[in-house]
Image 1 (cartoon, rainbow, N blue to C red):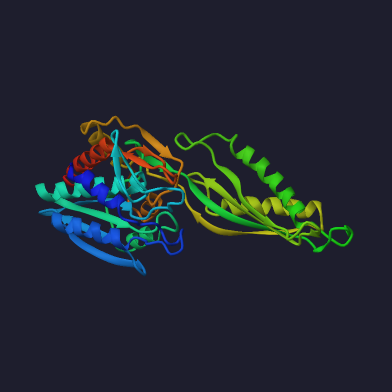
Image 2 (tube, rainbow, N blue to C red):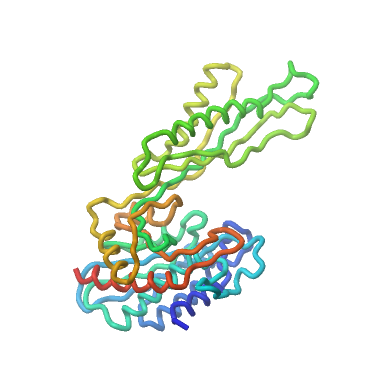
Length: 378
């Protein structure tokens, strides 16, 4: 078996479900040790840094014979949960696909970048530096990427998230906003005594739906389409015969490059202000819960074109695309590291059956090798 595919099977066989998503889950400790051992065996210098208890980043370094540019490969080790899966950690290769939790998201990309680093170590790096970073917690709060950029720097980076072997130069961001409307509790038979917080939230929902329609009618970003928002969850009321005194709505606003941080909260505040002006008895407010900015690599950066050339040489025919999901590329980019996404294709992200295409993993590895040679030789 190809050593990179054998490594991929080993990685899928390790439970690395994120404990911030699934309380009591194993986390990244075991897979971090496997990755560290792989890098040491290839001759890279390895640094293991605990980001939170039992959850370490692994950063491996290959230095060239002379100083030069630094290229980083980055991928996350954690996965989402395995509810509904029958054998999530029993990798099976069938019809050119390798199945198992994390196979596509994103242990295929991890295996490709580790295989590329091993090949570069075997042939020797003439100039520059190659950094291979395996980070924790991307599926939740990206604590690993935040810790990585606090210590490490590079002149360019590739995050090996699944892109179907296209070169992704942009992706959306997101913002979570919580809205609360307040009423007055009362017996259901006494309408003069009660105010219905859930009914008042209905007014908010109607305005939000109209705003989402406006967002999706705006001129689209050429790679990402339009911004959007949706209601994620509504919580309110206690029993049939009572007026609810409180209702909580959780919404997500998907953002585009160039939109200001906190735009979702600003839009919700404007809706609540309008409702208060229309009805002095309306009570409601909003708070921002969490957000991650959108990302787009600077148009003048040579990295995307270099990666496309490398991919063409490895037998791919990549397009220049944008991704709808968020990734750690935004954190690297915000730290001043020009970053693109490039990884193998497959299907089943976060679903009950997940797979990665084996041939894509090999082509991804070969592309990364070609890019490392070209980038560090500049």
